[in-house]
Structures are given as structure tokens and as C-alpha cells.
Amino acid sequence: MSFHSQIPHDVVYAAAPEKHHVEASDASTWQNHHHQHQQQQQQLDFLHLHSGGGSEPSTSAGGVAEEGTWQSARHKAEILAHPLYEQLLSAHVACLRIATPVDQLPRIDAQLARAQEVVAKYSALGAGSQMLLNDDKELDHFMTRYVLLLCSFKEQLQQHVRVHAMEAVVACWELEQSLQSLTGVSPGEGTGATMSDDDDDQVDSDTNIYDGSMDGPDSMGFGPLVPTESERSLMERVRQELKHELKQGYKEKLRT
Image (cartoon, rainbow, N blue to C red; front, side, top):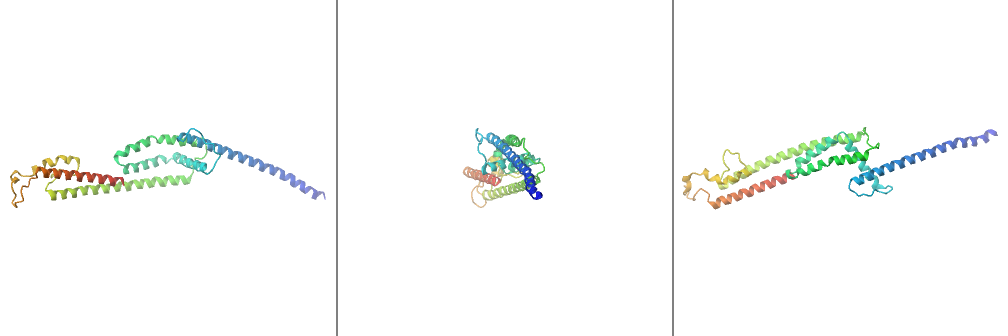
């Protein structure tokens, strides 16, 4: 009888410490989560202030948008802190320089000058936290693959530019041959001249390739072979228009 009466007491006394332990554990877990949330909120406020979003810190208690912002900022900070970040940035800039017109290259240099500000901002965001993991295999794989992809893309861009540059040179040569067959005017033998700015004076010297004895009617009776002033003016105008169209077309191909 005393054995049966002792069982509930033993169960009660045995269960009481366990319940107390669970309550203490729950309180500790809640405090950790609360501290972590406060730390994330402070870091988000820091990022908000340094990104030009305003002078007032965020006072929201949470939400999907806030969590998404935090995750995005954390991923950016992890990428900036990765050992392959500098190599990734260099590969990306190399691709941009190939595909960017020469007159737009200063914009790339201006953005690079601000790169350290971005690095400093996200470095401060991740300071004092344990979110940057050096053994993140997934991030290592992403950074490695991205660098290799950009290097391969750079080679493809270079090949693309070389091919179109050769096509432009061939097109210039074909146009000069067509112009010569139509007008009888040659850009000059042995000069290696194409339709560049150095050809502007070529028209003035074109008359030197004709012999003075050919000023009269030719053997076929078609009139003088030496171009008149109006003909030379027309040829110069055609030459300038063709040169302008070629340059514009070549620039458009480089942009695309």
C-alpha cells in the first residue's frame, strides 16, 4: 500500500525539475533570439544610414521585407569578404572594358573609385557577427564558377571584336575597290591607306596620277580623263559619306 502511494510523489518530484529545466531553456532560447534580432536590426539601420536611405533608423519589429533585406545584405557581405572577390571584380571589369565604347570608359573608372566605399560599408555590417563562415562550400563553389564564367566570357568578347574588326577592314577595302572602279580614282599605291582621316588630302593629289598629255580627248572620244572640279568635289563628298557610314556602323557593332 505504501509502495503505491509513493509512486505519484516520485513522479511529481521527478517531473518538477524537468519542467523547470524546459522553462529555463525556453527563456534562454528566447533571449538569444531576441538578442540576435536586435543585432540584425542595428546592422540593418547602419546599412540604411550609409546607403542614403534617410536619417531615421527603422523601427519595424520584423516582417518578410525586413528579413529579405537582411538576407540580401548578409549575402553581399559574404561575397565581399570572400578571398576570390578581388579576382571576381577584375574579371567583371575586364568584360565591361571590352564591350564598352572608348568614350564611356571613364564611367567604369569612376565606379571603381567608389568600390572601397561599398566594401567598407558591408564590412562594417558584418563586423562583430558570426555570419561570415570561412568554410561555406556553397559560396566557394559559386565564386569559383562565376570567376571561370567571366574569364570565358571575356575570351568570347575578344574574339567577337576581332572578327568584326576584320570584317570592317575587308568592307573598307571592298568599298575602295568599288569606288576606284566607278570613278577611276585610286587611294594611292604602296601607301596602305584605308578610309581613315589621313585620306582627307588624298583627293588633292589624285590628279598627279594622270599624265599631262591626257588632258585632251581620249582615244574613244569620251572627253578628258582628268576629273573636273565638280567631279572631284562629288568624289570627295561620296568618300566622306562612305567613311562616316563605315565608322558609325563599326561603332554600332562594337556596342552590340
